[in-house]
Length: 149
Image (tube, rainbow, N blue to C red; front, side, top):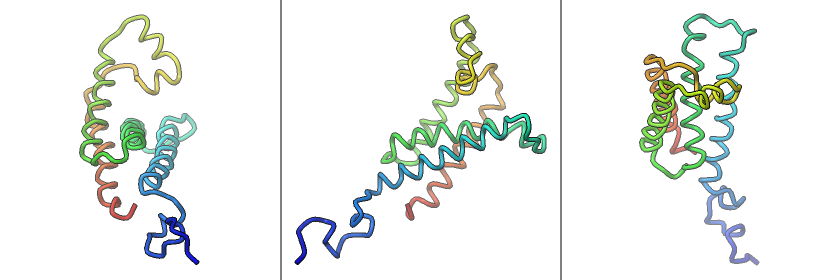
């Protein structure tokens, strides 16, 4: 005898049979990708790691921006990729532009490890390009993979 719940319905998808909703699956993917991107970004800044200068100069900012996109996607997985990408670029640009503002309270916050990683220190126009590349790479990759996740 089959019960009327979804777990016993042979017509439901394998994900529904184990009660994993597509949104939950995406969130798990975003959490995993966020952790990986965080590790990559920190590794790019690690003193004991000596990659080529090009990677050393650009990878941290690209990873940081990708992290902004992934965290945003974690909280808004149902929003379209383009909307999340534009929002992430807006957040990243706002934080970069905030580096033009210097007051004792925010500069002291920037001197903490977490504050320095999140807020940065000095405005650099090249960072805006790096952020755009990091976010667009994530958005394009997700767009290519999304039908399968």
